[in-house]
Length: 118
Image 1 (cartoon, rainbow, N blue to C red):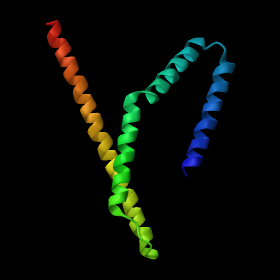
Image 2: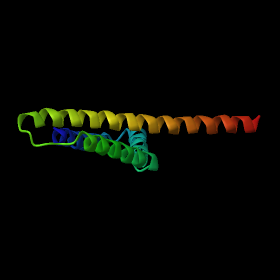
Image 3: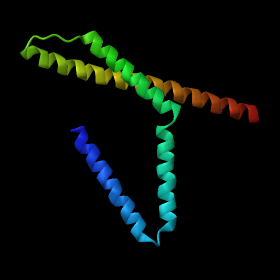
Image 4: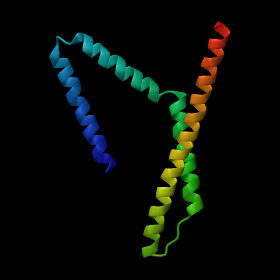
């Protein structure tokens, strides 16, 4: 299912690029799209995103390892589904904790900067 979604996204982005090029008169919107896309790429390349991916992957692997897998036949499918579900929840919780820490640090830095100006 993920491959289909990826294929649609890349196909739709090709259509957007070709329509933006054929417009011609929308040079301001084209540069805005370039700026937005550059900002998105730089966000994806940021250390915070890499850290979030690492935290999510680590917690998901830990949840999968703690759940364990066996070869019991029919029951292993239900157990595997439960393990994947718990791994997803663990990854989401880990990302939430990490983002909360990051946002709290940003708020504290902003408060300190505001106090230093006053």
